[in-house]
Image (cartoon, rainbow over all chains, first blue to last red; front, side, top):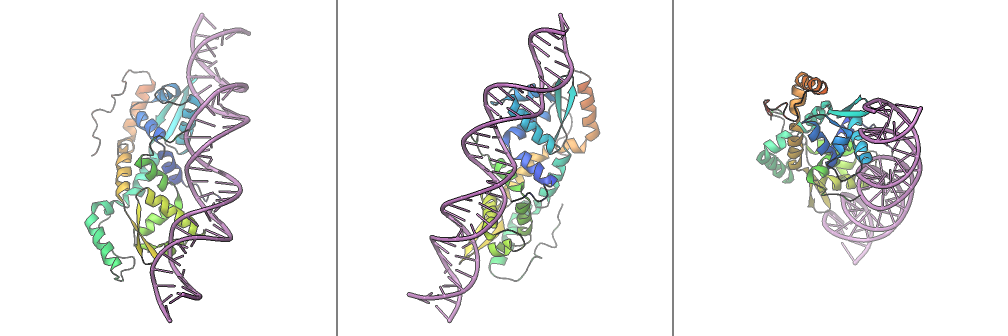
Amino acid sequence: MVKYSTEPLDATFAALADPTRRSILSRLAESTLSMGELAEPYAMSLAAVSKHVRVLAGAGLVAQDRLGRVRRCRITPGPLRDAADWIAEYQQFWDDRLDALADYLEETTGEDTHGYRRTNHRRKP
Amino acid sequence: MVKYSTEPLDATFAALADPTRRSILSRLAESTLSMGELAEPYAMSLAAVSKHVRVLAGAGLVAQDRLGRVRRCRITPGPLRDAADWIAEYQQFWDDRLDALADYLEETTGEDTHGYRRTNHRRKP
DNA sequence: GCTATATTTAACCATATGGTTAAATATAGC
DNA sequence: GCTATATTTAACCATATGGTTAAATATAGC
């Protein structure tokens, strides 16, 4: 119903969920670009691209510097680190797939190991 | 207007953009859980949680095994790896912040270095 | 078979999202 | 100052999202 907190991670992941926005970030990783340059390759209006940049800026992923009448965009990757850190918590799962499968089988066959299965594994190798 | 491709990354990042869904993933990283167990801590209906799990399952992040009338959910982290890989492309930016700032200043002062600024830097240390 | 339990599905609602075109704003440059 | 250019903002629209309650479905267990 209501938005709970609009945590930074919400905004970051939501910003990354759109292919146009990922493309924009990817291009800004190569060089800074004005709005016009940014919009050129996409089959949508400049106004639409402007909105996408606003979403990225709202998530703190992009900043705009005004140089005269042109707005030059650059990437500000801080929030990406937090997103990467969040995901990294799960890295063990794709590192140790067989292990995870073993745990899963163990669990579904009924053993009582509530919540403490992978305790002795290293989180970040 | 129309959805372009609904690429896997779109679905993955969109799924991660909701705090309830991140919480669900986080809990499923500890152990598998039935729908009822999953829903218990949240201030929303079981139907709402069921929808969240559907979104996660649609993104390939969660699978459900039917054991009688109970659906036991488990994490399937494959898509997380792809998301992490996507983000990792930008890691140099938060690794080398000062370097990036230098490049930015260089660019805004007008040097013609189109697109090949960070060429000699290691992408993945 | 009947009843209770676990879960999903349907119908609905309010708000968010991603796009449009047209108007507004601000600086460039003569 | 006037005109062109770069960009944003406004008003609008269709669809998606995240929630609700009520009904439907399916198995458990006597």
